Length: 131
Image 1 (cartoon, rainbow, N blue to C red):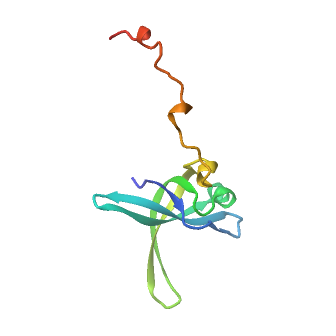
Image 2 (tube, rainbow, N blue to C red):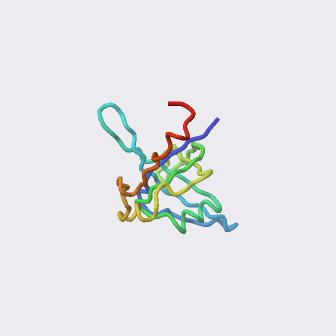
Image 3 (cartoon, rainbow, N blue to C red):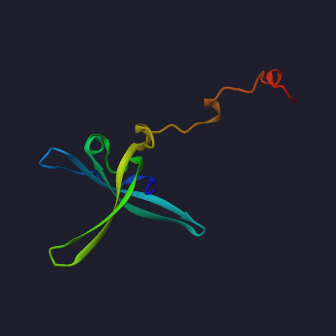
């Protein structure tokens, strides 16, 4: 099985191209945090979205936006203009969605406080079948 799930932030606006058949191809890089015992590091994962997913990325995704993606890892290679073989690893997007609200991505998010919630436990003791 070849499936990966990532949550990260776009490092720049998606780079979008269309094929001769008018198929949208959007490329973007996700900065994904990786935690370990001595701290945290960031991996930069190249992603490719085709068709409707590419059009969605073109229309709504911008640098800094936090997104969740599901896809498959695909490797490849090509020869560059200097004649050297270059190996690639990309995540081909199967599903993608926003991982935070628009307000939060713009720095205008609201942090929850105790005043934001009602007392949901009042009167619950009478409904419980055990004590």
